[in-house]
Every structure is written in C-alpha cells, then in structure tokens.
Amino acid sequence: MKRLAIILVAALLCAGAASAQDLLVKRDGTKVRVKVLEITGKRITYVRFMTESPVYKIPLSEIEYIEYPDGERDTFGPKKKKAPAADAETPEKWRGPVRPPVSVAEVSAEAPSADVPRYNVGDIYSEDGATGMVVITTDNGAHGLIMSLDEACLAWCDLPRRDMEATGATDNDDGVANMAAVERFIADNGLSWSDFPAFEWCRSKGDGWFLPSINELWRLGTVYNGGSRTIFKRAVRKSINDTLKSNGGKVLNNIMLYHSSTESSDPKYSFYSHMGVEKPYTGDGAKGDKLFVRAFRHF
Image 1: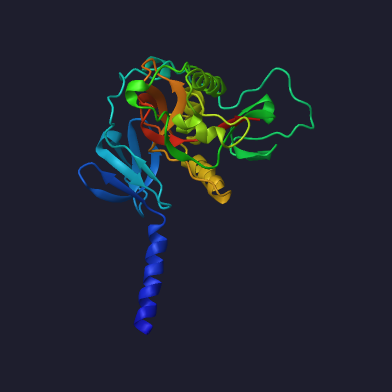
Image 2: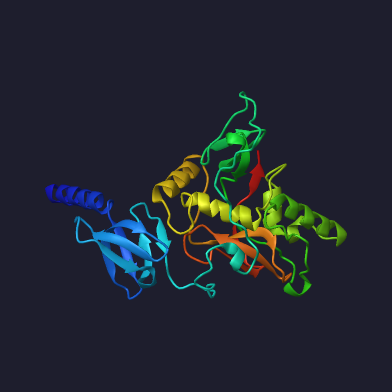
C-alpha cells in the first residue's frame, strides 16, 4: 500500500511538472520539451524546458506541430494546396478577392445612446432569443457580429457535382447577401435548403443567423489570434476557447478549414478559411467538401 501511495504521489508530481511544458515535434520526428517564447510567420523562438538560456530560433519549415499543456496544437506541416507567392501579404493578391479589415473594432461617427448595452469582443451576447460570442463590434460596442457557440461539419452544397451552378452568392463582405442569393436560387430552381447543408444549419438557428462571407470569416481568424494573422497571442486564443467551453460551446480549431458563404468564380467551388497564422489564410475548394461551419448574426 505504501509503495502504491508513493507511485501515485510521484505520478501527480510528474503530471504537475509536465503541465508547464510545451512539446515541440520536428518534421524529422524529433520531440523536444520546451517553453515556447514566440511564434512568427517564419520561425519559432523557445528555450528548453526548465531552462532560461540559450534561446533557440528555428524556422517553421522544420516544425510539424507544437502541443501545449492544455492539449491545444499548432500544426505547421506541409500544406495540401500550393501556397501563393511569397510577397502575397494580403488576401486580395490570392485567388479570391478578399479584403482584410482595417481594425477589429470599428467606431461609427454617430455614437448610440447611453442606455444601449455595449459589448467587447469575446463577450457572450444573449438577447432577443439569440446567444453567441461577440467577434466584431461597431458603434463603440453597441452593434456588431456574434458567432454561434457551436459548430458543425457540413458540405456547402449536396447537389451532384455535375449539377452545381452559380448561385450568385459572390459577396466577399456580406454573408446576409449571400444567404439571400442562395434563397433565390433555391426558389428559382425548385430546390430546398437541405440541398445546401451549411446554409440550412445556420438558418435553423433562427431569425438573422447566416453563413459568414469570406471576409467576415477571415476577420474571425484575426480576432482569434489577437489582432494579427502572422503572430498569434495564445492568451487571446485560450480566453476565447475557455469562454466558449464554459458556456457549453465548442472551441475554435486553428488547424481545420471553415466554410464561408462566398462562391468562387468556378460554380463548383466556394471559399474557405482557417483560424491559424500560416499562409494561405484563404482558398477555394469543392462545395461538396465537408468543412467546419460557424453561424454569424448581427446585433
């Protein structure tokens, strides 16, 4: 019994020590226990676990992934699709005319009245029968966009590939406009919302919910990384995910792809994005691909 107690205590102590370290896995299979100091779009800076020096810097091209104490991973493995030219810094230069936002929060010229509730990015909004996380604010926090707490893995369109046509959902900035375009396409062609699973799932959440446009989705990635798409702030990611979990939601995934409502110039393709800091941030893929889906709503 005494031996068992000692083993249990030792296991607890080891678990406590392990909880403070990051696991860096290189593409050659090497695993190193480290403390990550900084991740940029080109390299990772770290010290070995339980040390303060020397400080190491290695390029992202050598890293497969980093696993943090809470189980979250940042993956830097080879991309499935060819990346854009090295000088492509903004989404407009990639395939798909995506315009990045000037800032996370926008302030209108005319401020709302003092009695209007104001929200910050990351707050939980629960009014008018709608509940979600605030991801974009305008008018000093009186208005903006909320994101659904949960997510699904669905296809943009379930029609046979040969039957997919342009729906007119080509707005890069306005997911509501894209939802309206899909609704008109459904009515004009005798189809149903079930033929467009990602849109149907968002619509089923109630009045005002929609599948975000590519720019709205791109913006979410900026918010999730603390205001940048080249260097992320892990504390911001953790805060967002902790809030989602504590409110019964699903954490955002910085590895997987998310559908936008914006259609590509090829009617068989639509645009997607991810929540990480690795380029390219956007791309287009088959509408029939099952990707993650988050619903948005204006407030």
